[in-house]
Amino acid sequence: MNLNDLFAVAALRAPDKVALEFRAGDALQTWTYRDLFARAEAIAAGLQERGVRQGDRVAFFLSNRPEFVVTYLALLRLGAILVPLNLRYRRVEIAHILTDCAPVLIVSEAAEVDVLADAGVGTALPIPVLTVEEMDGWEKGSGCAGAARVAADDLAMILYTSGTTGRSKGAMITHNNVMATVTGLLAAWGWQADDRLLLVLPLFHTHGLVVGLHCALAAGATVLLRVKFENGRTLTELQSGAATLFFGVPTIYVRLVEELQALPAVDLSSMRLFCSGSAPLSVETFDAFARLTGHTILERYGMTETGMNLSNPYAGLRIAGSVGTPLPGVSMRIVDGEGRDVPVGQEGELLVSGSNVFAGYWNAPDKTAASFCYDAQGVRWFMTGDLARQDPATGAVTLLGRRHELIISGGFNIYPREIEELLMGYPGITEAAVIGMPHSRWGEVPVAYLVCHTPVDDGELAAYCRANLASFKVPALFCRVDALPRNAMGKLQKHLLARPGS
Ligand code: AMP
Image (cartoon, rainbow, N blue to C red; front, top):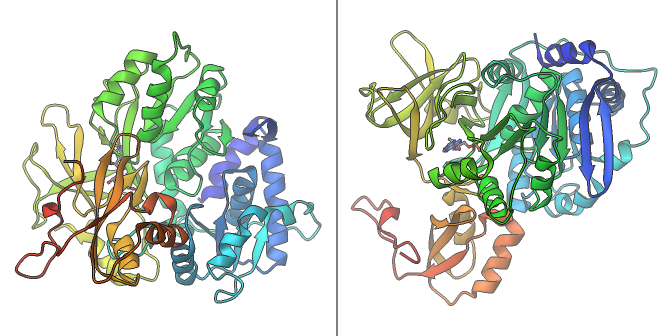
């Protein structure tokens, strides 16, 4: 079985049901399951004519739009591998990913081709770019591609996640990995064909793509796809009664709470479930949302490499500050620094195992080997790098922070090393250290500590960062220090850096 088979069930059962409704500004498009799969077939034929074959990587540099969905379905049909790029990525990140995964084609949109050219696409990186505008005229042709024979262990996608080395790693996700997460969530969250998911999260990330889009299509439900979360507009839509489900990151819930506080009354009675993930949801936000709407947010925990791991219950008590218990098919352990299980109630690193866990990192056997361990029975466990504790009474897990120094800003991961390496390449900078500073809106923002040997202008440095990095990775502050704190072994001791404002 593969993802084509999974989606075919819904498409066969109710072909005339609306699968996708896309609203951008005042423009509205609706796609039935029949429309979606017919269009995917036509695009598959067009891609095949342009040389895309089974096992090829195809990168997407696309905003949330129906073409993302249909072109992805076309890739599945061809057995090609999706590599979605974060649309906020710029030169350094784009060039790294494209060089690493060597796609045969980049699918993008007219508005983004300059960004790709700036990253070297068409010059240093001779990869053809196809825009969705160019695909507009593609009709379902006679030379239509037959569906490839795709095995459950074949790759469906490579999702790039930032690495501790500062360079993002490509997590190889098989059809089976996605199906494990999807089938687990269909059961755990009670997905129904009459569900309507308001999807404002980016499709280039596992949260929007796997948890949102895949579950909805597998359930035969309707995706109300939006370009992004918008102040005011998203809440208006939630109040309109159009949706039954909403997935957000904590930053979105913080903004919703701000808006709700300014309203006299709110009617969210069409909604059956609000979920949160990708970063810790504060107890304050959980409580405020419950007070203002009558809905308790269901918090869950997942990762690019593993899909969904743990979740609060759909039916039952959702505990603020907890990510719940393992989803169906997922096993977990909490271990100490030596890899021994800690007594329940004590903290340690969370390990997960199950069909949801990815195959390894693309082109990086050493990093793959370093991310897994094996128990006495030979079971392979993924070391998440997240610290956690399990409540002895309820079994619910609380995440305590990250083993490494990941910064999460507005639901996006930022690995300090990537920024540090860029800063250290700037004239005048000798050393750089980046840490997270608490921020009321974004959760955290990066702050850079610099040791400079010649004067450096903050404005020019910020412009350099903006040209090379996604905006959310650009340091909010540049602090000058005479030296960085290091231990006897010369290792940087970031906890000794004073947090600005503290
Ligand atoms: P990503 O690969 O972008 O999905 O990021 C995965 C990381 O996000 C995890 O390893 C966690 O550190 C963090 N994360 C995901 N969900 C939660 C959550 N509910 N609470 C706290 N951290 C979370």
